[in-house]
Image (cartoon, rainbow, N blue to C red; front, side):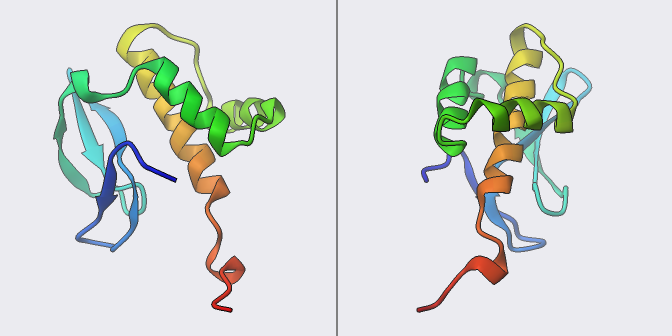
Length: 109
């Protein structure tokens, strides 16, 4: 899968999609694995909700029940504007993490 913003953490070594959190009026990028600060992120570069929804749809193989369950799990709140983008981004990251093979599922053969 192609990531929007692939990030390799210098602290924990995780290679994954960037994670965004509100920091006052700003958005900061943090590592999904260890929550280490990476940098402040330009709000304009965060993908549009439609683009994020397309990625979510691909991650869950078009299974609406997985999306609804994930929304409950992360405490998804319907919103508008930048908050809506961040909520869908969190949903995308959560579902992407759930779909990643766990170390015991990876076969070297």
